[in-house]
Length: 115
Image (cartoon, rainbow, N blue to C red; front, side, top):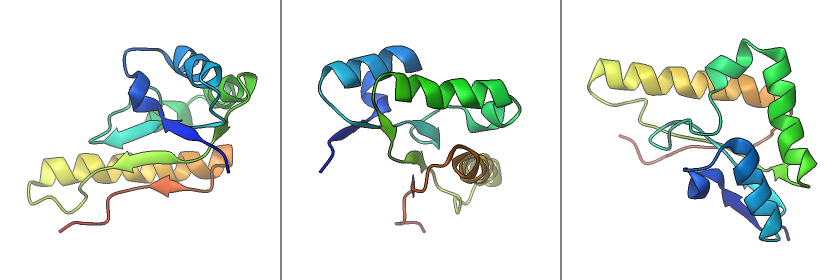
């Protein structure tokens, strides 16, 4: 069993600092927020998808601290009745799915309780 953390626990830190703190705490995995309600403090998929070097550095930062990116989090409400809200969360989810496929992350955590 590996213990990990959702990176949002380190919301006031950079991705590098969050990875370092998780590693120093003895954790082996980290799950960055990628949009929706959890925000994009450590991972903005749409931006990373436009930046091959940024994607590589993002992944390497976790690896540098001995961490596996166990999942990407994108907890939003794609069925929200306000279209602008649902459109934003849908775009976040689509970008998260694409990013996961490009960086080799096999799990995306989402909310399943909607509507």
